[in-house]
Amino acid sequence: MCCHWNLEMPFLGGYRGFYARNTITLTPKVVNDIHKRGGTIIGTSRGGHDTSKIVDSIQDRGINQVYTIGGDGTQKGAAVIYEEIRRRGLKVAVAGIPKTIDNDIPVIDRSFGFDTAVEEAQRAINAARVEAESIENGVGLVKLMARFSGFLHMYTTLASRDVDCCLIPESPFYLEGKGGLFEYIEKRLEEKGHMVIVMADGVGRDLLLESLQSMNLKDASGNKLLQDVGLWLSQRIKDHFALRKMVLNLKYIDLTYMIRAIPSNASDNIYCTLLAQNAVHGAMAGYTGFTVGPVNGRHAYIPFYRITEKTNKIVITGRKWARVLASTNQPSFVTPKDVTEVMKEEDPQTPLLEGDNCNDDNCH
Image (cartoon, rainbow, N blue to C red; front, side, top):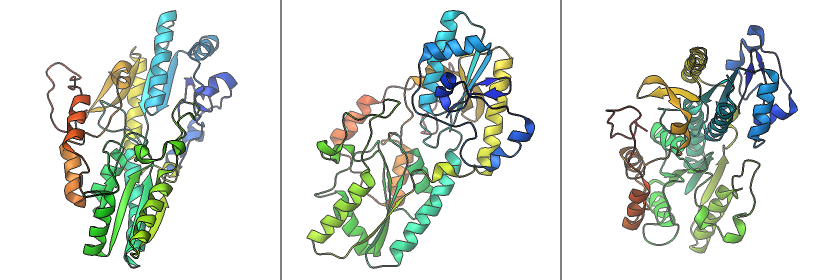
């Protein structure tokens, strides 16, 4: 989702709104209680990012401040808009506000919407646990949104303590053989009689048959269209236990879009207010080409290039993921070769400011 203000008039429908030129007038009365509602009153869209046409619209309308609200894709879009504005020498401030339940925007401590999503996911996990406990060899499989970052699943697992296995995009896993998921499920059911699995909708892509991966299909933003790995995994688990002639009762809960539709909680309401105020203060002070957000607990203005240079991901060799493994007792599924590959991919983190030094996973 993104919005772009000309005084009190945002474009509707994300970046596509620049082409349609549909706007609504925002007054104190209109926005008085929007923080108590889910969704968005200005709409959202995928794709629609023709930078030249967008800046043409900004220039034609005499807009001098552009605010974007959204995740990593929205912030990347804002960054290229800013570069085109700078190339044309226009006096337009561009500011980004990080809003995504995936928490995959780097540098900042967290994005708006993340706390609310973690809190709401607890309800689904509790339902999965109740269902699993109520029947012989019950398995509650809960799928949460996230293509490439597993922060929502990791924090939900740590907060719940009812989860027996957490599957995230950053950590590979395998199904069969010693140390695999099937063996772990059997062991857990033998010990407890039930279990809860939390998974991201971006996990297990390498395990799907190539013909089912929709390799050539993409959405409007250019992202690969992924098959429903939750349905696929639930069927594989059922098939495995059927072959072994073991009783299994699996309940699959897909919470992918339900979390996005709820109103924000108190913590996110306060946080969103701070982000909005800081974005406006930065633009009015003459800054441009920045995203606002807290860094190590202090709100800062972060250049777009630092926000867009990479995606925030869980370090599977770090302490937070180790806490998840300790909480769930699940196998890591990671081989020494996987660890070596992860270490190669992880570039040394460049401190935001000269002299910064932080080794904890909390610092990005």
